[in-house]
Length: 100
Image (cartoon, rainbow, N blue to C red; front, side):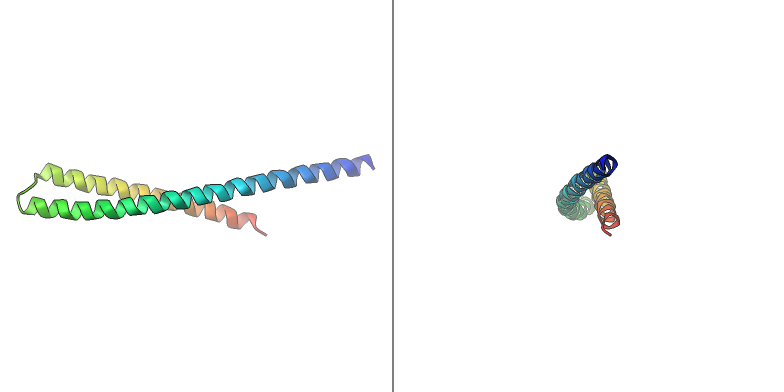
């Protein structure tokens, strides 16, 4: 009887821990989704800015340094977006693996 009660309590504790981890994982997934959305919008804006800056460079209105700086900003925003996408998929894979 005592061993059965101990086993049951361990099972309850394990289940509670698993539910907490599932909740945390879902919250992380939602935060990742929000961050991904924001980083994608930034990525699009930096892409547009890079194109416009290069056009201004071709017209002689901006220096090469300014054009390259805009392109560097674009590449950094792309990197941020892709890292956030990777994080989102990592959380998604964890969620799927935890569901029977």
